[in-house]
Length: 252
Ligand SMILES: [Zn+2]
Image 1: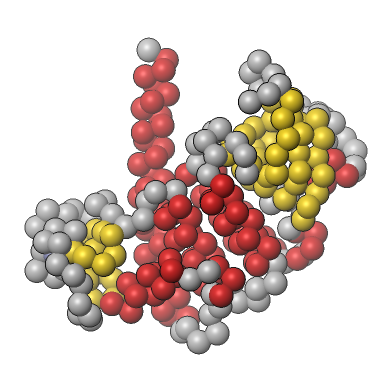
Image 2: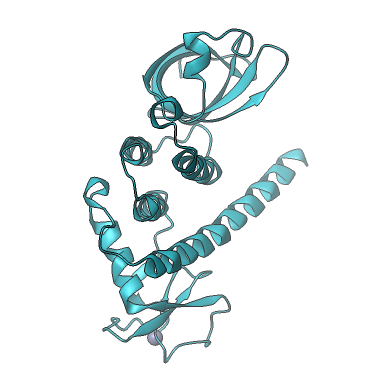
């Protein structure tokens, strides 16, 4: 990385540093997650200040310092909240930004995940009925970041799953257990209907812009949310634990 470097990115979050400055976390196309100090943004209502708002897609120029980068210029490509003015969709997007933040590692680029998040934010602005879009984003992100579960075969006996009414999703092992193998080795399993299993497979295969939920029942979407969030919560917790563990090792 040069001392001065330029990239495109999305503001994930920011933290007040002092009266005038913020530390901003950016998910960038070229460098993955990066952090930088934005000076003077808390004082003036400038273009630079607006570009540092959460979920803004920006072109940014940073200067690599000894301990932390300084954000020296930034230009808005697209801002989220000022355009939607919808607190509900803003909340959903913030939740998704938190997942991106927690599952990504600093300076470890994942261009696929960046483009997915950018596309998701642009689609979410116009989606009036966003539940399926949000769940689809989460599954695609899970897949791009390397946590995609095995959904076609039983993870214990390796037999193809052929249209039983339901199965069990082994959250810890990251795959589906057929009914015969249930409880044999797994310890963290939740029931999943064949319909939901197929729905997740369809989501993973389809382009994000083709996904709309005009026909899907609310109760089905609600169940999908539960499955997705249980799976994500488990992996976010594991990530946290292993990172804390690694940080502790670094201190020894
Ligand atoms: Zn089995």
